[in-house]
Length: 302
Image (tube, rainbow, N blue to C red):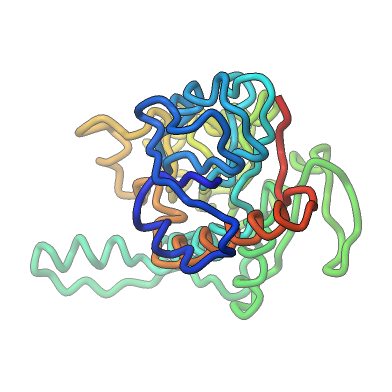
């Protein structure tokens, strides 16, 4: 027994093993059965629907998101929770490159000028020959790095521990203070947890050199909004933000008014690639269950 939150995902799953029954359950009402082997909660509705899992027997709760901040506190006892690694990396990396290129090449300025009917040529910073610092190096970070390679940049990587991989050195957190001043573009792609909340603060931003670009595609609370505003108001740094705190930003929030701040409304994974990739992951989990194997992508056990 597998539950999905809507007909779109059910249709994307296609034909399944005859031993598998799929029900549509949006988790707004009580569960339709006492046991559902795999439950897929709705996308972008936070952790509130997880309360409906209380008293329900499951083999796996399969999220549609990569991030899982707040899930540990919300997940009732007795469940295994998997994230959606492999679903959103490509789309989030695409948006990251789009934000970097738009900011570096002044696309936002050109769009504003065009909306006013003005021809406004200008010189802007290249991406070629720049130094890009990835703060966070999981699946999304690696996908961003792969897409940066053709742009002739120097990529530096910081993760939760110091190590060497096939692409070279991955620095630990202790190196961040030394690396920040060297970067023309800083991309923040860490998970949100106690260690990373407000990682991007006054000290972090003060270490970036004048004119550098900060891109946040992680979570809004990874950055201190007031610290961003203090730097953005002076024009010393530039910002491209797919996530903010609060989120959504209130109407007419100051961040919207600053010409050196480019904002997209948390749409890193919101592309046509999501549904078929989510269906592929769910089919993998179903096949593993039928084969008596453990699920993949498990991040929590309550």
